[in-house]
Each structure stands twice: as structure tokens, then as C-alpha cells.
Length: 401
Image (cartoon, rainbow, N blue to C red; front, top):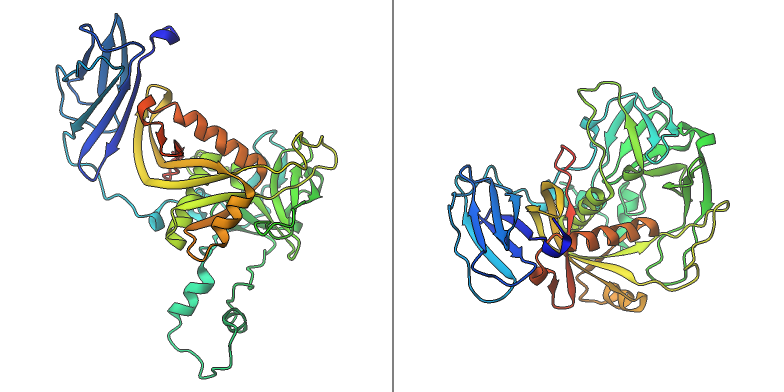
């Protein structure tokens, strides 16, 4: 179909009210030739207009309609709410119950780890004898609530120092162990000694003096393709390898499944932040690193705007004629860019409802590109909310999407 005649269809499951909402953008105003219908099985909706047709697979079965009502408004937008044919399957999980991309039960002991870009070996097969899930980021604070008996001493004015003396303060760290692959939300925590040294080179991170600068780290790159695959904490002898940058080479094909994408990791981080803090707004802060062998970015030294994301709906299923893999489980967000000064004010405010998430600048840039692309999935009339742009980030559901 010529792009000038393309009909955009977007369908989203509203499980709480047992309906599927459908939006349509036509290339020209509604006319007497405009028709819309739902297939007999309730799984597809078709719109025809000026001799062209378009069909979208619905995220859930709805009651079939031979002819949907068409509003003769003279505009190019149409919308319908279609009742589900049967109760939606299962309960919608809360943010704290979301599936983690690649948990310990998903990975086979002894699996090797390789760069996803060029397949260079990062960890040899047989080195990681066991995979273990790490606790959530707020485990130290939760231990204080869960502790059933508190010591009688009241000489601890500094709460964090008190928790540290108890063994689980915020400054306490889980140390990597040779042969053990610890699994964080979006990364693997590995011992330095488990890595193939020739496959990785390190470069010091360069952070400015702003309050939103992250702690000292060293960025790790694949020797072969120069892709940044992780970071090393300068205060520990461990490395964090990004899940979206590597492949886990499992021998058992029955266990092996799809690898999490950057979008799935980003949505997992956003949902974990909501579950941990109750804040639905986040700012992505870059951990900057300079590759000693690679070219410096064109914007090196320039102050870059930061990505600000607001989680609007943590659990949707949508279909779009612009998304070939529909239907897709996703997080619906509003997003925008803000200046570093504005980000500082939001993060430092006493009444702040914003949390920070640290990622490499390349990953943040890519997330922005994915959000911009997803904005074209929805009808033109629904692409903005006040000064925010509407975007979709695919979720990990245990099956890759």
C-alpha cells in the first residue's frame, strides 16, 4: 500500500473494564466508502477506505461486528471500544510481581557468555557453575523492617552506620564469587577472574561534578567490536555485564530461550523503580566512558539533555499495523527530555517524585530512539499528553516479550 494511502490501526487491551480500545488514522477524511468490521472469530479488525484496506490483529478476542459505526465528522480519526468475548485471562500482576529478564531458573549452569554483537566469548563454558538471583535494590532497608529483635543499644544516631554494623547497611556490598553468576535485574555480577581477559578492555568513566553524576566506575568494552558490555565498580573486584549486550550460550535447547532486549530491560528497571519507591517518574543518567582506542563522540564535552520518563500504565497489551510482531506486552509511558539543571532541581527537591536510573549514554540514546519509533504506533491524535510524548516499551514476560 502506498504510504499516502496507509491506514493506521492501533488496538489496546483495557483488562480492567474488559474492553479493547481501537484507534484509527485515515490518510483522508472519512467518506461514504469508509467501512470497519470485526472478524467472526473476534481476533481481527479491518478498515477499508477509498479502495484500500488494512487489518490489525486484536490483543484479545472481542465480540464480532459485521459493521462498526462510523462517525461522519469529516475528520481522519476513528475510535471504538469493543467488549471482550470472554473474561480476560488471569490477574494483572503488580509492579513488584513482574518477570525479571533472565532469572536464575532460566539459565543453565555451565553456560558460556558471549558478546551479542560479534559473538566473542566473554565467559568460557563451564566456568559459571551456578546462577543465583540477587535480592532487590532495597534489600538493606527491608531487612531493618523484617528484623524481629532489635538490639538494646540506642547509640546509633547515624541509621546507615547502624545498619552497616548490623551487616546490611546501604554501604554493604554483595561480593562476586568465582564460578558464581549473580543475576541482577538487568545485569550479571561476575568475578574478574571468570572473564576471558583477551576479550575485554577497560576505560575509565568520565563524570562531571554535577550532583547527578554516578559513582566511580570503569566501562568495559568488547575487544573485537568495541561495544560497551558492562562496567567495573572501582571499589570492588567484580564486574556488571549488561544482559542486553550479551548472549548466554546454553547447551540444553529445551531451556534456551530468547535473549532480553534493551527495551525489555529498560521497562523492567522502570517497573522495579515504581515498586521500590512508589515513584512513577524517572530520569536516566548517563555513566560516561571514553574508549581509548575508539573515536570520541561528536558531542563530547557538551551538556546533553536527559531522558525523563513517566510510567502511565505498567501492563498493557497492544497491536498496531506499524508493529509487525503484534500483539505485544508493553509498558505505556510519557517521555520528554529535560536539561541537567532541571533534572537536578527535580531530583533534589524535598517533595521530589522522581528517581534516577543510571545507564550508558549509548543505551539511553537507543531507548529514546525506541520510544520515538513506538510513538508512530499510536494514532496521531493520541501521540501527545500536555508537554509529554506517548511511548511504548516492550516487556519481558518470561517468553521474551
